[in-house]
Image 1: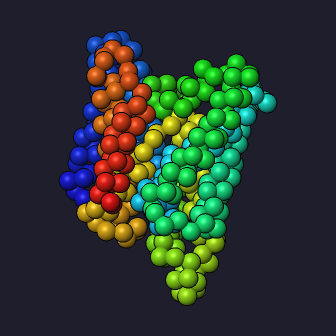
Image 2: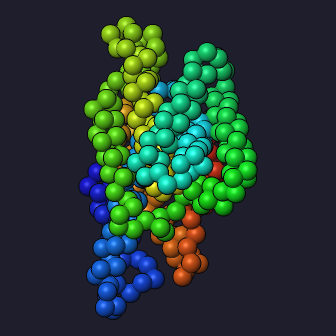
Image 3: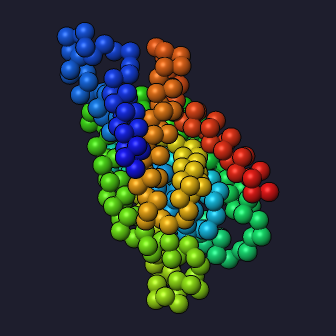
Amino acid sequence: MVVGLVVTVALVGASLFVGEYDIFGADDGAEMFGITRVPRTIALVLSGAAMAMCGLVMQMITQNRFVEPTTTGTTEWAGLGLLLVMIVAPDSSLLTKMTVAVATAFIGTSIFFAFLQRVTLRSSVIVPIVGIMLGAVVGAVSTFLALQTDMLQSLGIWFAGSFTGIIKGQYEPLLVVVLVVIAVFIASDRFTAAGLGEEFSTNIGLNYRAVVLLGTGLIAIATGIVTVVVGNLPFLGLIVPNIVSMFRGDDLRSNLPWVALTGICIVTVCDLIGRTIISPFEVPVSLILALVGAIVFIALIVKRR
């Protein structure tokens, strides 16, 4: 854990001092450091930890290693809610946008969980495929609405997860995910028990449906906020929990710090690569995450076979 903390702090420090703007030589370097670098790094830390932990909770509840917000359609539902707000009330506040995005993400995740409870699937690979299909349908609806309202470009910008536009005054809503992380840690033992099945949870006196509802709500809140502020961060919740579980097993409470640190490290590394690979331009972090996540996803499927 000490080594993990040192590596994480080193990457966070690199994020603060890597960039095209000369914060040491420019007259307004200190001011720009506080306006851009610090908010961006805070956003990296919060979004990386939150989405990684959401993936872990979702995998425990569904008892499936291949699910996370971007393979179950949760992100697409949040994007649909954001698009609806921009169409119906374009002058709405950021709080309104986040509230609607969280609500639609909750509805979409509930639909996915309801489907899993009513259909017995023999193959664990089928579950994320169904989620991806549902997400594709929701994404198609969003694309159609965006075309009809001339907002297709805005939709593309929202879904291209990037920290380029994160500045002071725009990252503060992400602080809400700190409460989500705390709630996940408090309820971690319940999520672990729920992951053993409804019958086991009932036998030990646990309200299985209430735990699933709590997990769904926490996932929806974190996904909705991250989608509105940062955008789509694909496969992050898939990569991190599987890497951690390979070394530490399936105890959610003891794995949470490792999942948070690993999520922060992966997002920060991808963001640093995106900043430097075609400098002075930037590659969206979602593009790099999608590439890495697709490789890991295929590797997990091959290993499972």
